[in-house]
Length: 318
Ligand code: ZN
Image (cartoon, rainbow, N blue to C red):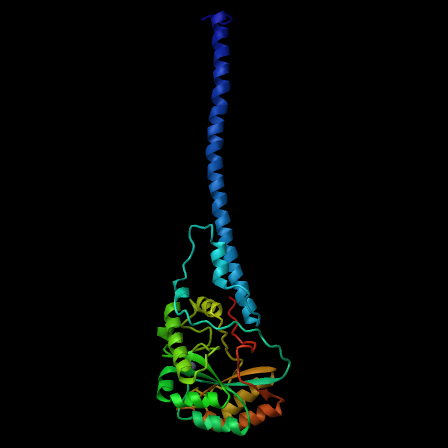
């Protein structure tokens, strides 16, 4: 084939036409594949964003709760809405359990008063009636977070607490940290057992609770947020404390207990005071009159914890 011949130009023209078809075809295939890959990436990012949003919503809801505000929408519902288009929607099987274990979500009462909330954990005990007598003498109402075996042993004391106008909250049935904090299901099972016992014995539906060891402790560090979410969804507020009497510390004296409470309450305006009602807390009973009079001298009035009292909760932001 001679350069410049008709045949030569034919080949050149045909080759040019072929290239004009092949190059755009190849390019369109390459970009087509690339665009599919990119849109997949975008989808994954959008799903990740949804997940982050769900976590943030939960976190904000929990924070609002710790500042005393109530949730208008259940936390788990928020998560499920956000997960609606996601393939990895989580399941909350335990939400379907214990259909009667719901409390009416209360509105928080605002107060500027200097109020002390005396709380007694782990009872009732052989000391309960003496505690009630002292409270009665000072015309003070307090709060008892009770446990299972001691309530089974003294159901009449639960009634005496209610009859005297005090509040009973759920503490725990077994009070065995490793068992109740093994899972959300385990926590709910224990809570329900105690709740039912109190309700059956006194006829009063307990609306408040206190976590054994406080809401955040070394046994529940990996799931306390999930337990709190679930209990919040069910309408139960929990109460930690901001003043500790230290009354179950080894070798503590009556004077130490009084000093711990009065020193702790000085800097507070609302004091939720942790004490115990157990066989080994004789010192608490004998310290109680001085604690009450000392708090009165600091300008405190006393009230029982009801579900409309703004909770004191431990700060668990990481
Ligand atoms: Zn306890």
